[in-house]
Length: 392
Image 1 (tube, rainbow, N blue to C red):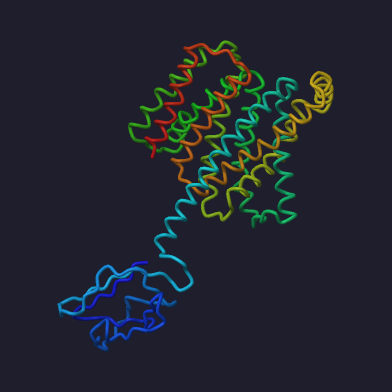
Image 2: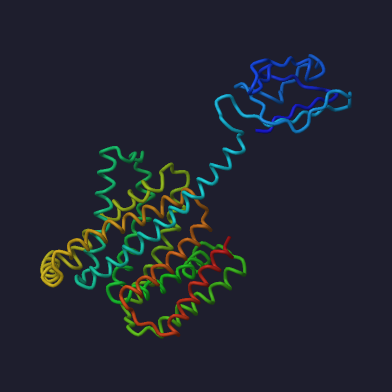
């Protein structure tokens, strides 16, 4: 806190304590020793209002011996219940905020990598992406319902209007989630994420054609490496599958609509990121469950489950539980981080997350990658980074 007391020709009254307390001395300093007498002219806008005693931390300029037109006293102070100047506390709080964001990012990336590994393991042994997607949403919904019931987390205050505006977001989220899971059941994890790095192209296309938004030239230029890199990676993919490719493309489009609906419908809603995603998971689960039963069904699930358990053993149950839990946790952390960072920082973090998933999945699953294929992935990811910079 910088306290500046300035006397001019028309000096306002000072509304506050008439005494300045020195930290090492209990003696008070009369006003007459510090300042010339001030006129008793009333001013409706006081320049200083002190609700707590101030301790002097340092005095930068103190000159009252020689009369001047203006006498300026500048001192750094801290409130009586503080142990150090306020600037130092602000600097510490900023450092703590940066550390908190770093922890969010590291946790987000780590959880996403673990989810993708276990999700691919489950899909290799149990190729039923509709049930796998349903279990992921069900696990997250159960976790949050228990957290609210036990008051580990504060339950959100919602009304009918909230759920009404959340419905289109949940529909788009459900489609994107299932499509991505279908894609990973047919192709390598790395290929799915390379194609999903093309999401900015869908975002610009939808925003321009349907919403009439315009973007700077740099945004349009950044789409060239995104589209070119994705195309190069798709053409040179050794284990290319059309269903897997289309699943990733549909997921991109669905998540673009999810973001649009979320920005439009949730403005002014006082729901935290964690609770927002929890409500989204619950509503998506209600939407997805009947479709999962209709597309695959309990008979197929029972037969596939027995086959997977007989081939993998009891570890398969752990894989299913792990992919369900980690899916919810990584999404929850990503939504929580949105409360702390700007959209640009989040976009950069999302790009780095994709890189970590692609590299780790190639290493763990020993995915064969041609140099041209790796070049296409690198170009697409670079384009995504340039897009996030140009859009801001």
